[in-house]
Image (cartoon, rainbow, N blue to C red; front, side, top):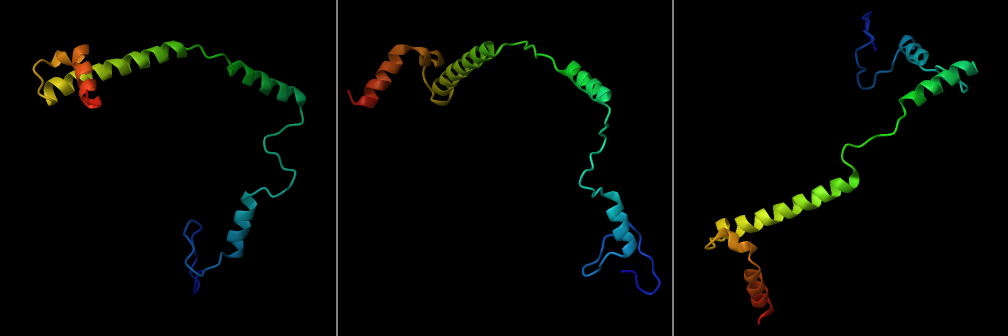
Length: 120
């Protein structure tokens, strides 16, 4: 509240325990439409309503994809496989200090690894 003749600006926030003045309350209520049947921007003219619907229909069109979904799935699977192979080669040859990094792609190496895991 404004004290001793001081006026409060409309954009100043209220202090704790301070109540809005009557003018501020009327301004706030004036900004809201409280009537129960209020429909903003609605007209009773069916011609305008049809034109609005027609204009909205013009923007609705079927989306044409550059890459079909089935092609996207194939690309993702191929890229995942390529990443797996690159990871095997780098992991075995560089990080694992294998003799030849391309030995990671040799099936005999994997048969030996599986045999060691199974305890044969």
